[in-house]
Length: 505
Image: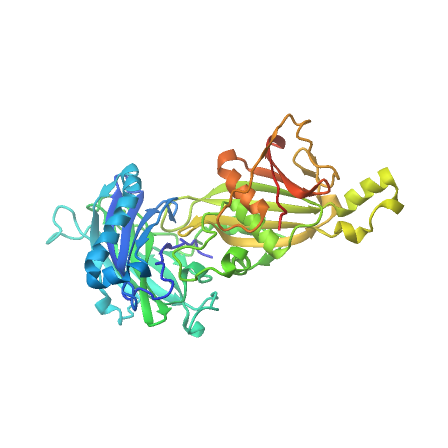
């Protein structure tokens, strides 16, 4: 598959009555052109309540900057005041959103104006032209000089799978494909949906709205396309916005490409190797199985599990799909690799998560039988004896999701494949002894981590950033019947220990 750029989502939070025609406005680029900020705002159709959002995008990673977006609005308790002065209320929430975003905009030095290279309003929404020619003007003679460059953007619609249970007309749902072509014959596919992300809602149609560059176009100037997404709503189609990075402008003078040369896609190659021999799992189905998603509002700005770190998401999916053994051990590792996509955007981090779930029921029963005699030990079924399994997840940051699952697989593993889980054999009946490792186990308490339903997910969500670990060992069962022990590892050596008084699920 040709390299893809995952789109930048600006999905509004519209729980009961959705925004009709969402308005958008560029805030600008950072001085180095890496970051782009824009805002969306409007009055909800039906209720008339105002909303405003500010999105800050890392164009190199093609992902929201952590902490963005900033959302403000008014609730039903403010209905009377809003009805008396709706546009004053809208202006107020717009100021609130910009005020909340101001520290980030200042820290990232987002003050470089956006230059509009192309723009089209919703008055042309009924026109479904797939191809749009873009001309990059000569900065010295923009009105009568020859353009510095030109390219064509092709925005097509794709019939691909979607999470359609909430949609009015599931047969009309569409993804999109964005391609760029140059006069010399070179072309790239910048984005091509293979599925419609659940966070996109009931997307039915797409239109190219604008192409912006960071200031006056120069060599290497970053550019971005704003695309309308028309979604099915309670009262007709609703407009939302995508911001998709474009390749930085380069002056092209008769460049040619090797005919027939395949476009490299290192992410596909990495995934094929990582998941070889595993039964592939549908990422949308894995997310849909999360308890945090069960009662979530599908039109929300972001899912409750949006900020889950990669290992926390892996633990939550494992718990939802497989469940914890009564006596077990989880060994989780995270390897981050840098992927440079073919097309728009710079390198991004692909996290490869390996989760081995070892069922220790048989080992712990045998260990107790050696001590107390087999006649006095409970039967095997009381120990929850079952298979060992391994899950693998590939995740990357996208807009609205810190760690979006792009591919996953699962398989059973044999005793001979278990090897070591950090500093001890995976099937060792006894848990890691903190005293022997020279560690004190600190209690995690009952801190809640949004988007988690299991203590394993909550613990990993709370610890991953602070501990800066890439390997984890989670023990439960036997003496830990009402507790879990979470150990961080570095090169197979225990570096910290925590415990929590809660069952894993």
